[in-house]
Image (cartoon, rainbow, N blue to C red):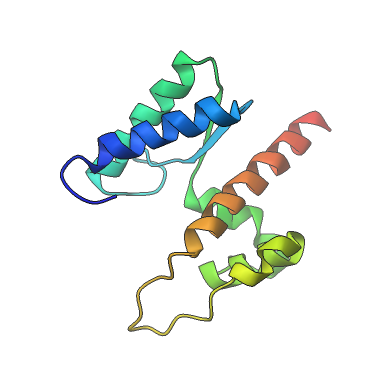
Length: 134
């Protein structure tokens, strides 16, 4: 989305996805002061998403970038985003085709990385659920 009202457009689309998919939980990136720093409009959008989920009785779980990295430490230390994408693709073979080539320092982040950011948050959620259940 682009433009001055991108936050409203994003929230509308997210609302439609939540209505269509009826998730049991919502997992987002923790962007609090202790979490991961993001642009102000994204912080506001995350707050709106959280309120939307709570209004619909959907529990919200937030994990910081540090928590995600720590969850993958057992694979040889804190991974880069590229290594994280490759690890996720090994666990979820359907994602293999979406792993972007390694980024050069002068290149922008590949837009497919968002898929792996989301998958990493989901995997941390399920790992946390397993840890608390057992």
